[in-house]
Image 1 (cartoon, rainbow, N blue to C red):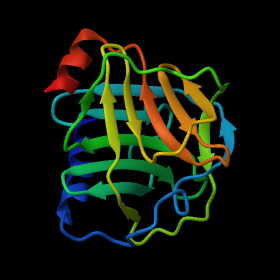
Image 2 (image 1 turned 180 degrees about the vertical axis):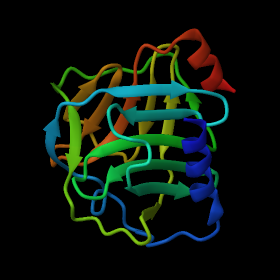
Image 3 (image 1 turned 90 degrees about the vertical axis):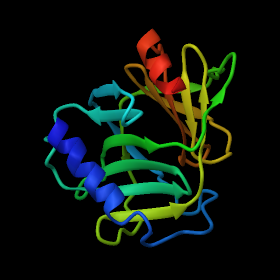
Length: 191
């Protein structure tokens, strides 16, 4: 797993000043949109160096993937998608400029299904990357980490273990929540 992370870091930081295929109008127009659900489980890893890695179990780490990335100043979020099936493969919170510490993050009581997303194939990738020049918000409470990709209301969740993906009315991925943080995870995120 260490080799995989080094490989991802190299790919991520190698062209840090070069952002490929930038979308300057991200309010849902070119975001990831849900196509269908499949059964798969996630592995979650939190550490000081790469704040958050969520990987879908059962997929070889060397499998080819495209990266949908939100990139802005000192923030980088990568979402790995299988080249052929468009299934979610991983989510990597590589770097954040800041996180807002909050007392409580409310998990809405909205439609909630179990599974792993397969996204629509309407996003074009250049050299395996689709970069959107956009910041994202990170909120941290004692029990939950929330990454808000865009400021659009969640109307449904897709839950897998302690990870909830929030989707808008039209199926756009708008948030990522990690529930039931351990003391160590909370401390690592606060650093």
